[in-house]
Length: 176
Image 1 (cartoon, one colour):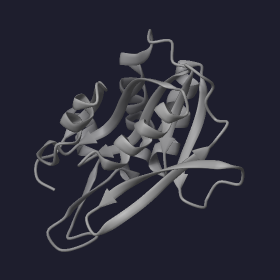
Image 2: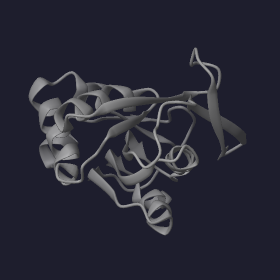
Image 3: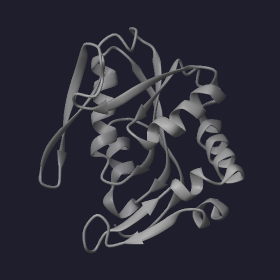
Image 4: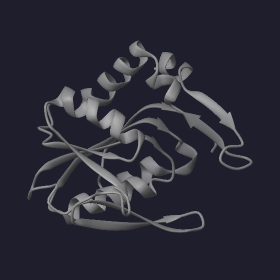
């Protein structure tokens, strides 16, 4: 996946000093790179009988919609609080300085539907864990999670493994 790694732009000191922001918009803008990433993210789950992909706002929408199409299943948006127009359920998760909430429509998942969680990056795993808890509270079963980027020093993949969720990532960057 070295070719994909080269398509990811690194922006130093964003959003604050000391952070190396991994920007996938450059990957998304490259037709061959995007196609390769979508294929590689979906492949491990082709035989998992996925009923729907749950994409985490915002880049998880872009990737998740394409992966859902490739897997022949539906798509569920998981958004920040207050962004969905229908009745929602929410899940809190910890931020570095406080708490945030993600939501989905209360009727988005039927009992025992098999759900794949998708986002562009996993760092500490807090947002992904909240999405997983939200899906489970809704009666869904998690078949796995897939990300373009892993920041292994922050432990997100390990955190999801402790929840019994298999994660698939395409590239890893050390540090923050």
